Image 1 (cartoon, rainbow, N blue to C red):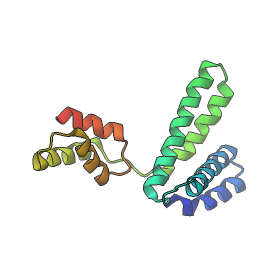
Image 2: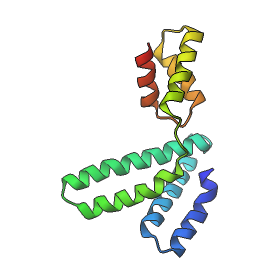
Image 3: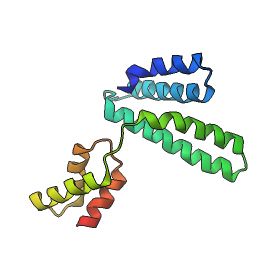
Image 4: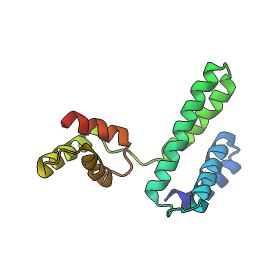
Length: 142
């Protein structure tokens, strides 16, 4: 799990004087702590860690677009540098072909007509995969 490695990553970034890595890793640690201490918090498992990091990457990508539109290229560059350190923390995604093959087998096996149920079953098999990709694949098969 990432939360077990984060302190080592922070220490390594400090020793190597990597400011953008340090910012990224500290942000991850902070996000994990906020998740664990939130009201009605669920346990911080691997799927939750992946979702948190995915949201952080998405937020930084949005910030890059806004900074570039405002002409603040130095801030956009800083956000892009943090993304470089966040992306390797995510596990490799399941390929679209694997998801499509599994979806086809589920659709022929179950014979349901409700897209939401298919998405839920596939999401259980591939918990780290983006829900948009799964729903697109299911929509194309139905």
